[in-house]
Image (tube, rainbow, N blue to C red; front, side, top):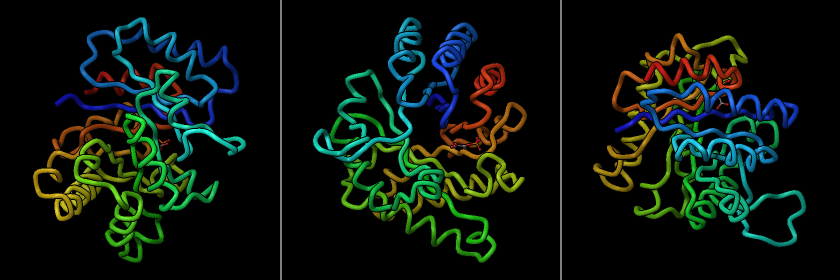
Length: 253
Ligand code: PEP
């Protein structure tokens, strides 16, 4: 199975021109690529991303960083999964910790979004992870379980198989606290998520589910996380903004 490498540009770059340069650079640098690639720029650059990357035969898919749970209506400021689908988007990141901590999103909101994204025929990438305090207080496993169960509430077996999960410990994201999650710790959590999913939906489903790792990935450490089969790929934030660095990460697959 090909490894999946996802670029999360977060709220960057500041101009369309810069986004175009990044997309053109990415397109030009992809030779003998062995990974499945997804680029998630901000909403306003999605059309341009699709236009620029379409030319290379679907090698790079387009993802969004969030969406709303309704299809259309009186929801000022929201973007629906149906609108994203119309732009050529295939994946949507949901429940990212930055939306939880900065915007105040809850697991219940994520669950509604997951359902809406699946109903639209797009693939949700659901982020799950604990804070440093939770880890230090030996609560990480309980927190992960709660988050998984709440953000996939009401999801059937056929649907869960379509979801991609990303284990993203909050303490390792964007080097906020200067901490690195070891590949062993990432693997432990990936296996734990598979076990939990297996208990609910059956062992085979748990084994087959894709779990990515995300948190301070760079060209030097990417390979360590990808070595184990239980980690299906990477969600790359900060390092994906430097196209040269991102291409090196892709090459490490
Ligand atoms: C992310 O945004 O999901 C992420 C993992 O960020 P970073 O790579 O910057 O830690």
